[in-house]
Length: 328
Image (tube, rainbow, N blue to C red):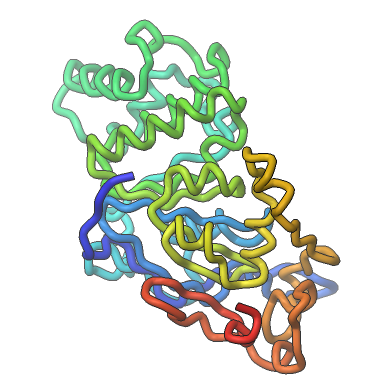
């Protein structure tokens, strides 16, 4: 993790991403994958984004990069809103993504050299073939791959090596901002630490800014400066990594933190696991009011009537809950 200044590189304001789902003959209904999400990421910072599967974490990352066209809200990069096709084209020279699955995100018919060189080809970032090859070999060296790997194919590599190829491809245009979409969840635990440390080193060396999407809170805490928690398409809490770990405010965040394993046996025995009842509702039929109320032990009548405001409770600590003052 790196020290950051106060200037926001990425600002997300009231972002919405709805998908129309067919529910019958000539009928469709909006699936609210991301519903009114706002946050900012300072230059050189890592913001961790956590939550259960299906909560909208990955959709947030893809919508920021305009891989999905936003249904509503705005994305501002370095003070400039991303609106037109030209804005998106220029933005993608500075912002990129590392995908979750290193097995399916690499083209099996392309050599490693061509996979890494593809962004250079699209944006015409070299003068001749010699310069292209030199850039590709330099990128491979940055992620710990040897030059003799360049002519081989993705299927010849292990999962960890494939993810390194994906990271090298993401670095090809010398970006400032990278969305890391669960980049270590498909890897063996022994390899995860190597890849996480590499992300740290690259950030230190290149001044990168990350949105780090994951469901493993221990991984997120290790790499993140701040952590945001999502539930059913909405942001429920946002704070510094240490603060959210030691002093969670939202009932959902408290439940997540209680599930984190404790290495100290005394602490583990003292730790009271908060088990949530029921399953996550479908985003196609989300509950009225607070999205978490159907599983919340503190839910009251008001929680079913109005959506809680996502507001700053203390300096830099945001949460969305009607009963924060009563339960903390």
